[in-house]
Image 1 (cartoon, one colour):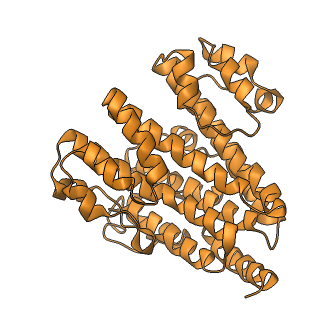
Image 2 (tube, rainbow, N blue to C red; image 1 turned 60 degrees about the vertical axis):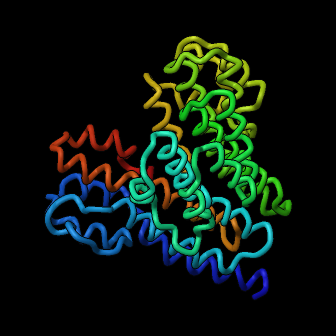
Length: 346
């Protein structure tokens, strides 16, 4: 399939899949709908039917949502080639990173193989980890040495150095996440110039979001010193440069951080009163930009990535609305938790 034909195919597939995105109207229905009547809402979101859909909050909804995302990703990736395909595949790897951390967490906590396997998600054809071998290792150090012989070698080496120094699950998780996002940005950088120019603003906003939220949590919640905070951030930058991040790590309070942010963030985060506000506002901005990319661009990798980003971001939103409704929370509380802003896709 030629490049133009491939993107024409992708354009048509993404257009069809986009009908499953959860609009504000669908989220409002979820907030107002009795839990016993949610099956039609899940169908609109493209989620397969399952047990519990007619009797309350569905069991395994997150896993079924992930299965839908993976199925769509598989369809789209088939039409991609070269660096475009490598980026999309690496984006999907985030879910396997979750399984890797589950295995490490289980080994460090002394769980048996069955208990660990029961917490992992089924990634179907996207699964590349040698799970059985990893579960048979004697300890986390052996597990990471084995992992160094796989395509996860870069992540494994960073995690093993962290394990040798700290023996701390939080530090290991942070090291794995840091290397994953650094690898994702490297895939963006490796794209041909035209594709890179289109994809960079989308995934650059994701990197900005991750770095700023991590910085706030590490520095203000965990009270890590500036040097450690900076070291734990993703070594990739977009609007928040290395100089910006280094300066922000010197701050002691949220108002100090907000005051020192570059112009794009001043307006965006001006009303934030806590770290949760910052996280939700940055997520909202990413959704808005991805939605614009999805509808304004044609025949581009950026449109494919925008759809996948939106689908993953919303994996939390509808379940949040459904759970809030089941718990009897107010509509205002549910809308805040789901990042729902009246009158827009965000």
